[in-house]
Image (cartoon, rainbow, N blue to C red):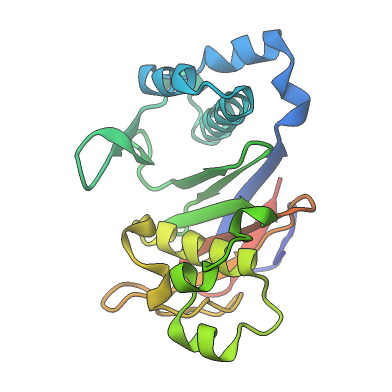
Length: 232
């Protein structure tokens, strides 16, 4: 990871990242009730529709974490924060969240059943992705995730899951998500501003330290100098 919490190294671009495991909080009813109390109506509706206990615990942990950390940064009660989640495809409130109370603070969320990740930055649009290593262990992965050059010549020492989280984090930073085919661009190298979609800003990607059996990356729109990631 490039940079740690408390680092004073001069930098033009900073992303703050929180990675949490859900196991410890999943079986504590009092903690779940306190976390649910800070959610808005859209988040609560999504949470109660999750029938798998681990999915629900991860969703609750991640969204409560986001509200509490953002509330601390902007000086507002977490339950008062307002988000716009308008989906660019259908207009419903299930897209990537945007903070209405402080549009200059950019955020990105990602979760598996056991690990969640939050990224915040005032340096520009940000994207974070965390995945289980085994999630990409299927036949034909290269056909749906790798550029033709990567399929022909390989990805060096990169694992399949690393290529995936870097690509998805980069697309999330551009506000595109998987509406862009990940096979259309080569996996960005860490710490190097990279153009991945014609006509759009470049992005800089950094790998994150996460528990074993997972992989994660964070990306930021480039053009602001070296990228530092502060882990919390």
